[in-house]
Length: 395
Ligand SMILES: NC(=O)c1ccc[n+]([C@@H]2O[C@H](COP(=O)([O-])OP(=O)(O)OC[C@H]3O[C@@H](n4cnc5c(N)ncnc54)[C@H](OP(=O)(O)O)[C@@H]3O)[C@@H](O)[C@H]2O)c1
Ligand SMILES: [Zn+2]
Ligand SMILES: [Zn+2]
Image 1 (cartoon, rainbow, N blue to C red):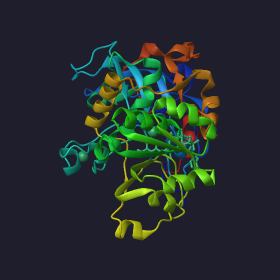
Image 2 (image 1 turned 180 degrees about the vertical axis):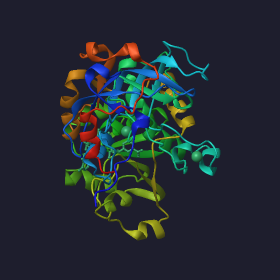
Image 3 (image 1 turned 135 degrees about the horizontal axis):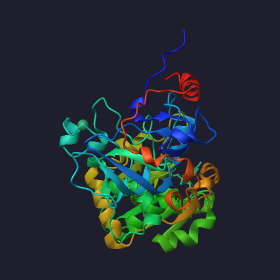
């Protein structure tokens, strides 16, 4: 028996170019390839805003979602992207907080209930309500020309932040800022493992928070830049001598790991008694992690994880970046070159985040039916192309 096809028409329906009101880059099956897709969005709800995506960052989580490396059953077609700088295009009937033209941003959390214990204590990123909480899957993410999103989860973009660089703050930024603020204090020695999208933000935050930053990288070519970002020491984890030196030198108080390493024994060893190892990098496989339990029992070291950040933590991250001049280092790409940027991300090459200039370089304008924006046309009028794709989704 084949699994029933789930109806995701509430997020918009895939359609031909001439009927669409948004263009996207997405995949129609696990592992891609990325292709151009067109959707007709549903009518805007009273509590939503329609945002025009100006810039979209590309996070390594997008690769894990496309490849289904954290688990199967993504809603296809899948349109990734959760680092978004945008402009308000339209507001729902119940919204007076925003007006068309406002410069805003949108990140990892699409929705939260506001009522559960976790939401009430301010950990809305951990909301346990049965609802779609993350930006995309099944909804459309930021690899899209426009999106309908709940106004309550939209942030104002501080005027001091450069629009073309700010998008990664919404994921890479808050994901590293939140645990460093939660568990770090000025003066401590902080190790940052992996200098990619997340890691290059972590170095800047920890340095500006007054910590002594030790950057730990597999890439010796990143040393000069890591030091410019605020690292006081640099360790190439591939050079045995440098790792031995790290293990003999003054121990670290905290480590934030933006990569995924199966054997973290040596890293736990480099922590002080009572120190904390914070995992933010997602697993690359289901292989168990190896460490020495005695580090936890006898030296009271902790293993922690952290997911994106709460609404308040996103606001704090944006504010911190604005006040202290923390800014992502980005490679900007045109809309047409999104697959090229994605390939660089897959290959671990970006220095340090690929950002798509969506609005400025969108090359398909004539095919998007902006005249129909917000009209109540039926979204259940599926054409055969749509049926054939959704028929394969099998979620
Ligand atoms: N917790 C959350 O909420 C959250 C949010 C966003 C992303 N993530 C996850 O965080 C991870 C990093 O994301 P990203 O966007 O920063 O990725 P990225 O830009 O590709 O950076 C990852 C960095 O990790 C290092 N690295 C890669 N392979 C490695 C290996 N085998 N061993 C050791 N180091 C390795 C590399 O840095 P060096 O060249 O310096 O070694 C690379 O630049 C991903 O798994 C992503 O899914 C988690
Ligand atoms: Zn992300
Ligand atoms: Zn909740």
